Length: 443
Ligand SMILES: [Zn+2]
Image (cartoon, rainbow, N blue to C red):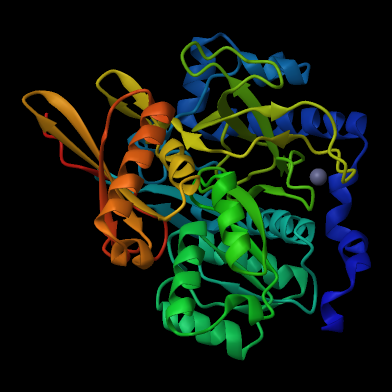
């Protein structure tokens, strides 16, 4: 156990030093890098250059960081429209890696890395994992999918760069994951929070108490999750759960991560410049205001992203973090504007449903939302698993739970939805990102 008790290492690790750069120095570095990356995109990316031309701008117009607001946005559709390599700023001979994310429709979006980009990616993940208290001597199991998805390899390089021992389990095969955790003495897990929850359930069934295992940290990302979900996971295992943020378009996981204070996620802003905008007007919003997160890659070579609209809704938290990092923080992302469902004119987010469920005793945080359209009217049914004890209880207890849940969902959502209580395990488990919404509406 002594290997786990070396907190000094976390702070001495050279890679963690940029986290504490004095603010003025950090801003100067950001401006210098912004000017360089904009020049690079302007010189090599046709789409960006033509948009700058339309605005009558050149990179020389960037004199301060505030000038970033004058630059054109980049959207996900730009990646699709220029598929596969249209946004590359490096020739293919300098590109050492391609990743792609599966789109819901048609072609995936493709992202590219030079060796320098891979090194930056590794370094931000080292800083992220170090911020979660992990270090050399830790045994880190990576249960994100390896492959075109950035999760697996991203976490892998970071954990290896940290000097930890990596167990590249990739996604799926819950029983094997649990066996590895136990037999190898795994101390930290990187995966989606919904998958970890699935592992806890499975361990229960196998008669293995997660609290008895040496695992002490979970670094969870790739899907929005709530504070209630954190409490639930921590109460059923002995881990401390950290939220990590990233997206392939920017670099993959490691754009930001929580520190031990769990008070927002620090953005590694020497490489990724954050802004919050009004998603309707595109106007920048002040710190503390909720809006859409926009990110600019400050050092990316192969595929610079200038003012990329993430669709993630959050705030930049005002004030400093007690940990001493000078990096700004964003609030946890509970929702993505892409996830927003519009049901009979009302905006509904799956995370609101998750919160309501976790506050109701007798339900499991496994749920699915089924959308149908009956005579032109949207119908939403929330299917919720209930604990086996509940199902074995008298009918009255189920009825009571149903009423309670109906009431809390009505309150949270502001519309009436159908609630269906289903037996434990009747909702399909995902091996990666949880599929919360089944949309059977045909327009
Ligand atoms: Zn902090």
